[in-house]
Length: 389
Image (tube, rainbow, N blue to C red; front, top):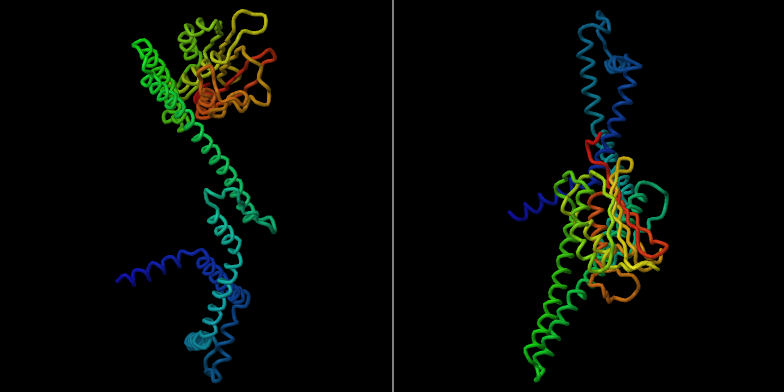
């Protein structure tokens, strides 16, 4: 029983083989072509078979014309006789057509087999390899080029994932190690008193809160990269107004002025994610802000509007000078300005990465530019809501 099942499975796989199907198609086309040629000959020479039937009968009836009642019987007999004589030749022709189709199909599918074996050899550990198909430019070389592009994107994605995991591990491990060291030092101090222990506990709580903020940001980043499940109408102006109001106390503590120019800017998407995008933009502007030269306070400007048929959100802030070639890198996870991993502002380098992920989920475009006097201008353009006149 298992052997018969295996045989049926093998026969099923053979029948589903593309080479077998192409060979059958080629053979069928050849046979149809032969039949079509014979049919054309009959159409253009209708008496061909009748003459053949007459020639096959050496003693035609004397008193009956060729079209008499005995002609059909003689004609059908001739056809039967010819068919029985030509059957072996037809079988040979069919077998040769099938063999020729098999060889031709193998020749045609040879590049596809090379692509299949090469692609199978490329795994997650050697995505740097490419197919590099040479020869004439045809559909198979286009397929190979498409797969090479896909492998390139996968390699970049895997590299980015490895960097992200390494950076996330570092960021999560640092507060844990610092908190453990802090508590160990406090417990090992023989002269410790309630005040020093309370101070150590407060510092440990601060480290725990930092780690909690990091985990929340990682979850926000993962949620935004997953995409939007339900698209709903939203107003960027109203969301920005709420974020600006919540940020006023922190801005006053840091000595930063927040000015707004908020107009209705309808869009579609996830309102909670869109509000998180604006909150991260403002939080980034607060953390990496400093008074401009000759001024006492830093400044943040938040504006929303409609340009053409797209909703526009713009956040500008003063701050340190940013090289133009480092602006795009700020939207990568855990990427901070410069090479120092220490972020004295209390951030983790995830704010703008969350902004980029949420913008991509909303099909929004981002334009970021360094200001000449220091700081950053970030403008997001959201697509037109569906059904808008």
